[in-house]
Length: 276
Image 1 (tube, helix red, strand yellow):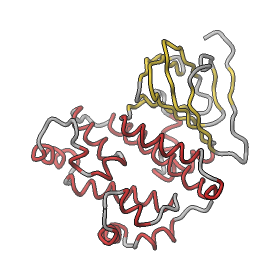
Image 2 (tube, one colour):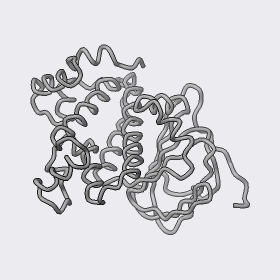
Image 3 (cartoon, rainbow, N blue to C red):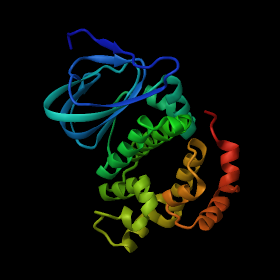
Image 4 (cartoon, rainbow, N blue to C red):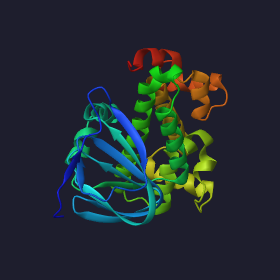
């Protein structure tokens, strides 16, 4: 890389988040003053990050840190979604998930690279477009939605990073990733078993062996964790949150949530909501 390295700085002190789709004009070497997560929405492209070259296609996601140096080489038509967070916002989001995550992200040598599913892309595109183009009447809720976007993205990255350290079979990694996907968290175990070529009895036995808990207990845990994110980072009403985490009846959601956290959803929101 002999050409000049440009530094991009799109965010100002009063702007913490930005997102856009990129179709062209990305084939130049640059670094950032912010954190960026991008994923390929369609097509193929060559990505070079800190000297490491990868051929990317739909579903490939990368995390770029401040001072990471990267560029693209176009090999045809390709669109990628770029999502930008300020340093302060990204650090707060990482610390929310794990007290060690932020330091682990910044000390890692190899790139953060994972695959997301078409369903995850569709979910993120819907959430990002709503966040970017929300009407002025609900603009005050934007910080909560931005936090929700960041939590989802960091969740995908964190889960993928943990899976790399555990020698699970490929099919099991897929199943575990599905159980951490909001689409399948809402839809349930049978949805998460899509494309898993084993019956439920075998899957549940292997799950207990690898993870130490039952599939249903794990799914309940993921539902409650997602509910906590929604309650603390959005203004979504509780009945809607109940639906989004797989409980069509709010009274059952309230029961399970209180068993899991010791508080009702309303009490949890009052105690943990992040100020705008």
